[in-house]
Length: 116
Ligand SMILES: [Zn+2]
Image (cartoon, rainbow, N blue to C red; front, top):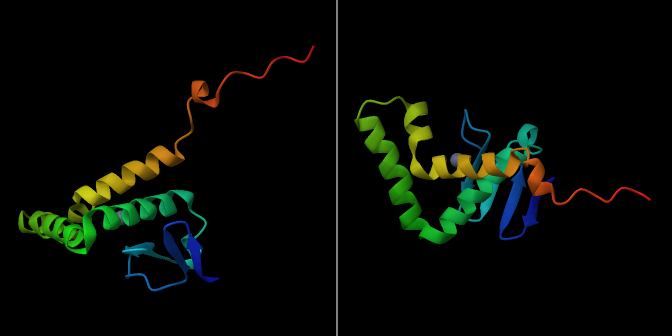
């Protein structure tokens, strides 16, 4: 599949991903494992990281991301917990959860009129 343009970023299916991860986003490139490329939730999570990279800039993103991670590690949290507590990860998870949650019935709009 390779590199595909997706709005404000590129999706690289089968691109390089760190061991133990399903995907990674660097600036405007989302690299995802082939086996995870169909996950709407994962892709929405990574799209939120694209937005964060663009909003914060390279130094802003890395300062918050790595700074938070190492601060949590310093406080004694394990890798997985420290990673999940990074504010940018919490925000991306929240965006993914919102986007893939079943919409409440009211959000679906008015019920179609009954045929007469
Ligand atoms: Zn993430």
